[in-house]
Image 1 (cartoon, rainbow, N blue to C red):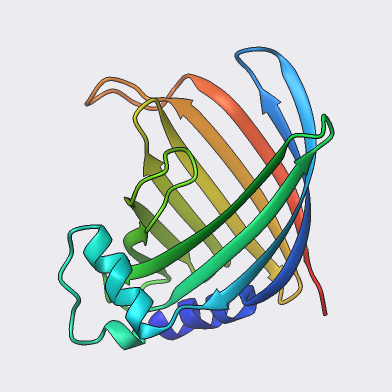
Image 2 (tube, rainbow, N blue to C red; image 1 turned 180 degrees about the vertical axis):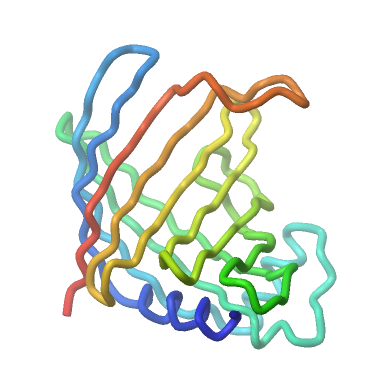
Length: 184
């Protein structure tokens, strides 16, 4: 299973362009944006730093864990610009023969909040979908990447208003859709 996940992630390395549509449900607004981003493998020293930033002790097999440096530049149709660089690391916590692999998704800087963040990931090798769930202070972000082929990904982002502990995710604040095409 880990090998299929690593193959999926290997396809993610490179330069991508994406057109996205965001639906802000709380203010009934639709916005389009264009993002260019580059994904590079993370070197071991930076993997150690990401682990330390998140209060984790590096495991002996850290060099085998997939990690990336992600740099992106987004411009909305209104002219708003967001540019960020993030180091991220996937730490599997399951090891089974099922098509599902789960684990922690660590970042040295999160999207919604500029601080280190530990989230949850779930990868389904049958559908080639990576689902990442992050609990921020005000929202819970569920981000899905489906690999159609090595040069085409589909993206879906759903941000829920963060519910009280023990309550289900119900109130949607934002939904985003994107088509991501790799520069070849």
